[in-house]
Length: 220
Image (tube, rainbow, N blue to C red; front, side, top):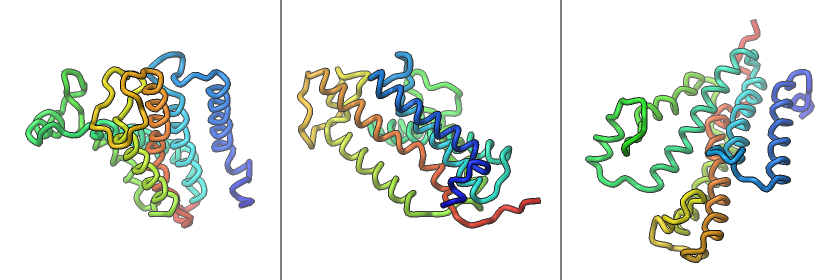
């Protein structure tokens, strides 16, 4: 534990942690859910930076040097972003297997307009962090976050998959858990923000793969 708290070794991670706390405090005091009224939400910002910081921390603990860690951090963060997008997108379901193959699995374009979803590129980004597979390990925290994320997604879908940006499309599914009144925009937006924020924890899953206590890195 003393090594974990060593500011000389973990100065970079401590700076990122302070930035995350600062963003959380600002979001709480301002009462805003989106950053500057844009498409980026504060939960997204927090969990994306947290993914970056956790990757750096876990690899630092294993002995990886700063510059090497940075590249893994960017790879893990990008992977976490697309992982959430994949889960979010397919939570709506796949319309048909033929459409899935034609429009998503074999679409090699670099844009997502006109109903296309760049699944192939997303999968490539998703697996990039596995170039560091030798630094990875299955661990209890990883499993716990996966279970928690699964539970959150289940309840999000079961309540009708409310969206804070598009409350008019509620419910997206047959409601299994009736806690939201249809047509109540404020209530739909509230639950949309709640579930969206909680589900963003999915984005740190790639970082948690690096949660290994083994000293594998040579310090040459």
